Image (tube, rainbow, N blue to C red; front, top):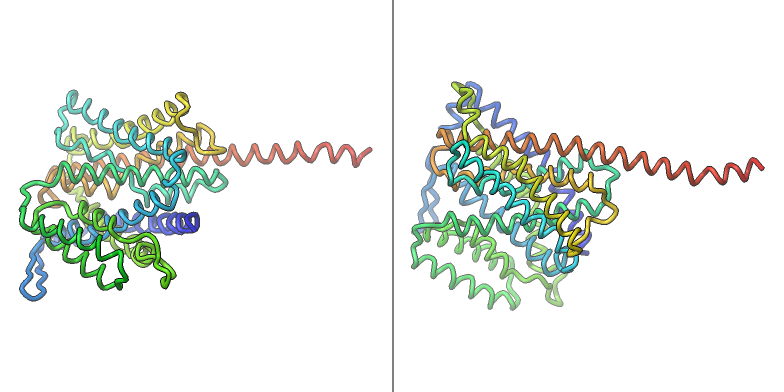
Length: 411
């Protein structure tokens, strides 16, 4: 069952990567067309949500960042909890290598970025941006070029990305939650505690829907990142079904919400955040310190950190390479982890808050798109070569196996 759920996740994420790519391309086209002014005006426009006496007013950009992305992190939290308790992360022996690889994949980009802070003057506050991996895009590239490669590489990539998500969420919680309002925060903690207790009993889906909505509303009022409480809410959703239920609330939520996340929430976020106008863009801005630091952090830092961590884990015998995988294949996965895109864009919005077309946001987008493209193209080339080598080796083994039979028949 755990394997089936993981494979369903992989298929959905790989397919959604195509939709994400189309959404990002659409954003770039619209931002650089006659509709560009309307596009940026729409993102900056304010819209009000009112339910009885409860009122919230935010820009479209903020509704996407704080509203829809909260659902994204809820789904990520549900997947993390499931994998830890029932799936690939439940076996400690399987955890060592991808966990260390994920940690290396965060340390490497941070070091590259900080070196560029000292050398080219990149702004210090952007160092968390290249630390994230976009699982949807990464799996989409792998699905395109990874035919014939060991399935263990897919599991390795998924596990690494889940741990990477945990690290990104922890960074968001620590670095980007400020000016906390304590009374709403106490309400959040009270609701989470009550939900954990009541959730052990027989409760229907509306309980979880209304509970999450209440926690989200109080989180916005508290002034902390909704991603943090979305993951916290996921942790109280029961993972085991009761006798009268076919599926647990957690698996039901994952099943129902995941397609919405893959085909609506993430593409809409990509459409809102990937749009950058090239009108008036100078060579100086395209090669600004922030652009270079983010792009090189993703491209150089990710591959060095992930590959170095896997090699170290293997050398110290505290972990193993994915089964039946070559070092060239592992290197291809390391490159693939440099596809940061939506997660890096999200952290960029938090690191440099401001208008979607502000100079720093433009530079963040250029750096993320550039680093992700370089990583994705390089990974596709390496994994394509690795897949071709594997097919050639299989063909040679097949011929070698057939030769003795042919000789015997001839005699």
